[in-house]
Structure formats: C-alpha cells, structure tokens
Length: 81
Image (tube, rainbow, N blue to C red; front, side, top):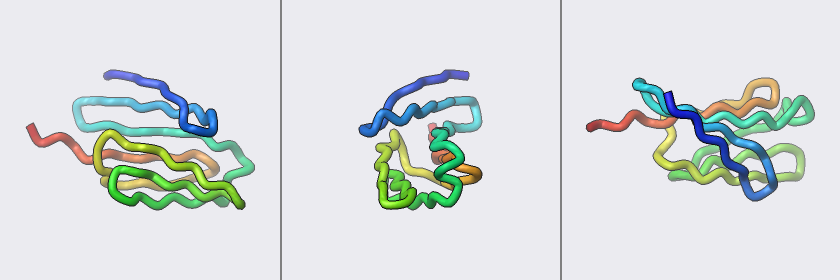
C-alpha cells in the first residue's frame, strides 16, 4: 500500500491510496458539504458545494466517484499492465 497526501488549490487536504487492486482518492470537505456533488470530466473531478467549486486533477481516469456525508471518494481505473 502506498499513501500520498497533497493539497488542492483551495488548501483542501486530499489523500491517495494505491493498493494492488487500484487507487482511491479521498478528500473530507466536512459536514458543511454534506449536500455537495461531484462530476468527473476526463481526468478532473469537479466538486460543487454551495457556491464554491473545487477542481481536483486526477492521475488517471476515474471508474467511480461519489460524495457521502461530505467525504469525496474517487476510485480510479485499474492499470492494465
């Protein structure tokens, strides 16, 4: 397992975990963002919360992205090596 932590443009802390089965990106936007939504366009995740938008550049295309209780989870497509 490999864990990376980086910061988005708005100082949002984001963690990326790579395991044998693929890679997952997780960001906690807090309880105030419990009604936030996410959309993935190409290799960018776009999170809308209230009037604010956060763009997160992804290292590879996303297979699935969802928000639950203010926590963003993005499961990236597995590498086919």
